[in-house]
Image (cartoon, rainbow, N blue to C red; front, side, top):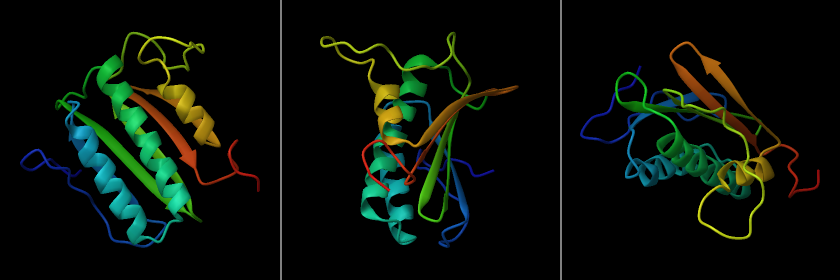
Length: 152
């Protein structure tokens, strides 16, 4: 399993499209920009279409923000971010230590900050879900397939 060095994410693997990446990031808001940058650079190196890269960047941002805001870290104090690419479809997973409630999109509101993260994920992803595991909870989403924004 990759580890953090100097608070920076570390990754595994090379550049072919069907390889997987796993990054452990600190359970802290300051980690979000770093994981976005790492994900975008990796997807660009695999020649994933720009629109899919943008969607994956938004999705990972929302999932990491939700993990920090609503859950606890994994036992090592980190969050695990995992992604894989197959045929220009990107599946992103964020695993945390779980929280008191099951993640679900909040009802629409016209006021107040927050509460829109999973609604954004749902609108960009062609699939998303939640997996409860013995050591935490994983929220995942797939982008690049048939979404509500693109006609295929």
